[in-house]
Length: 289
Ligand SMILES: [Fe+2]
Image (tube, rainbow, N blue to C red; front, side):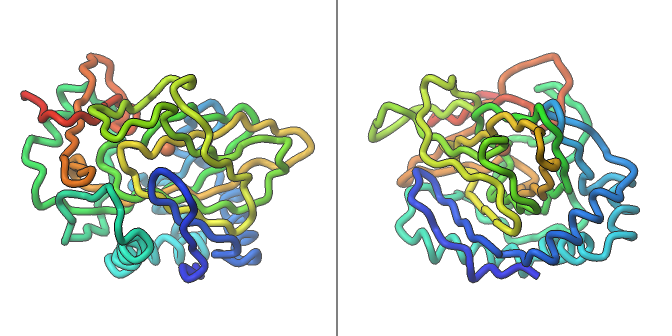
């Protein structure tokens, strides 16, 4: 169903594996049909992206009536496949600068990142301050975006180890909606902090990928893995169908750069938000709480 042998590394400031025709065109079309036939979506985010999220009742019934989506979900939701991806990254990036301090050994198939809205104190409590022995789980959503969808440059949630994208249809370049990878403009040998949302003028574009049917991208969610999506214009073109997911820990990932650990500092807020909406910066000092 998914030919991981076609995934190849690209030149980037953080580990990225990409391949075209990793999922066959026929299967992409069937997946599009299944998403199109879904009457209910769990939420809409980023001005136009409708999602069916792992963990919701709706997701369960979607999986029950959607053959190909179920097959893909079961493939990703397994320790075996997680290990395959982990190995691919180790093999392709042997001398990598970024490493995960605490490798998860337990894969929890039924777990998912909670979709409850929390303030920063509640989130900190949820994570605790012991970062050892993490467990890993799959988070996945079947998504369709309409015009207006965009994502400003950011790094993903602090619990994520790997992120992936499966594009189900071709989007003409002029319609936007391409995934853009960024790096910080000034090249320092050593950086004390990595903000979750750097300003656009602090960044330069490394690469941009126009969605192509069957293309799959995996990237390691390191503190510097800045990426975004350019504005998608739905003009003389279909909606943007894709599957987004990640392998996430049940606590923050403590990333190390050439042996130096970076700890996430969650920004205080009384506002209740989804865990993935919280702002946190990676710093070389441990948080005090
Ligand atoms: Fe992201």
